[in-house]
Length: 276
Image 1: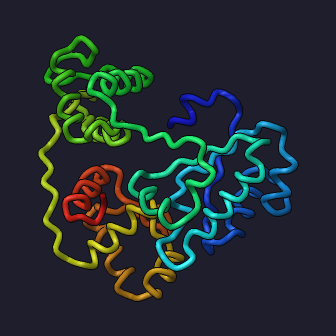
Image 2 (image 1 turned 180 degrees about the vertical axis):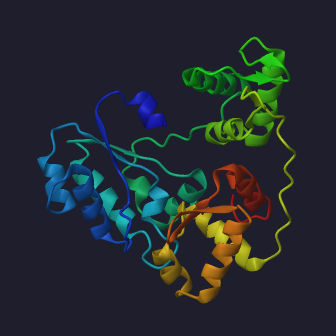
């Protein structure tokens, strides 16, 4: 992540608690869990060593697109306003979610800098993918040629991934791993990526849930209750989407977009004008 790459000092990641009310107490509980301390968020931050780096990862998981759904984020903004001179605060967010959250919360009020991480170039993507492959210390071939920076066949494979992922490094790495196969002799090789045609989904329930899972980062029982009043059709449709492998189940009540499907779902949501 950007924080891991550029912030060399010690840092603490703050994740939204599993049980959420989307209010100020979510922030209190998250900081208690992260630092192993009692008390509210303000007390905990006041006790930390000066210039501690606090990273609120995936801000979209702290928010819900409903009435008063930005309460937790607005409280985080208050904390940054009060303790910004004492500590470093870093917030990360899905670009599609951020476009909505900034219009419905006070999040931009305290952001000194907003860094939009652009898609990587094909050359940058190739370096990252092969560096990650090198750490695995395994031999790998593509079309009977050893995978390497110099290989034209490897370059062709990465070009294919690049055109599909649009330079998204996470999507590219998932595709890379997903196309590794083994022979009868247990030799590892890369398969040529299959052509993926995203279905023209007409079911309005599928559209609604795929949109909400994308902008919220996940859908849990609390989302279902708050957004849909706990309607039975939601669980039924989530199960259908899991069977279709568009969503995956992280726990008994939490669904997320399947990693391999994410770039295709986001593109489709843009095509049908649900995302900018």
